[in-house]
Image (tube, rainbow, N blue to C red; front, top):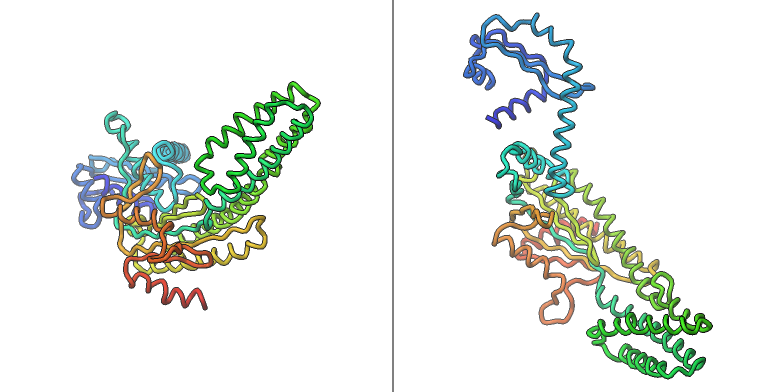
Length: 439
């Protein structure tokens, strides 16, 4: 019944006009489904009047009688004075309903993309329908899209972990050099014996920084020495000898994260990485809007040291528009051309970065449809079912792999790495796509 009513309501909304059936029994019930429903309910006369608010349809008023001859044009005309009040009432009801649906979506889900908004609205509506049934309100329905085609891509800063470690190492050299100079000046000024021990330990740490590539296994001990030992020691020292504050301030100025020289390399690296990744992120924001124009799909991106994204396209996401594989091919073309544009743009940024960093580009090609489910705990979509887990596992591991029988990473600057299961998948990208992108 709900589906039949929804169908009738949708048809009426396309062409809302006054409908008056003086004698339902005299009408051919095969002419319209509503006539069968009216006859089954014993209705003899029926009228439906559209209600508009600022020229927008907000509802309808239905009037009927189970006695013949009661409902006529004269009686219907008496409703006219009440129509402005009814239109405002229906508009308020719609606003309240939309607010209720939006509240459920925000509480139970998250910010929702337009391509899948309809499904979240549907689930939220079912949730509200059961508000008087406590047991059924405990959980919302599962949101699942079946047989969707996944597209995955990732843009990363090349060797970001290595670059961060190198920047930290350089900054620590500066930090300990300044620290040793300050300690020696304090020793010369006071002759305080404990300073010799602090100088010795600092020299030991500096030696490790210069020579030991596994230094970062001792990062906790290093931080304890700098944060829990040296800073309290220096603060207490100048508290007793205020006249030596200027000497100690050289060290405190050096370890200022915003301006200090002991953070210079890390600041330069983070500034460069932020510039590149923000540019990539902005590009994908524009791409997100562009790809919706041909066929609505779900696009989700994640920021780490780079930008990853998942795209899902298929009939179940957009049931009102017939799906064809040409939309998938078009989307793959856009995916490849966007990656090429990003690689080119990130390369052009190199001369303008305080610390040059390069990007790598990766596309995972998966030609078989999968099912995805909205994970309420994580507030995001993920693959559904044991078979589809394979796709998820592979896409999370491929960016770190090496090319077989070499030590060369799969992902390289100025290149786009394509990962696929069979040659046919690769040919789709490297044939017409290659010709298009190099034209």
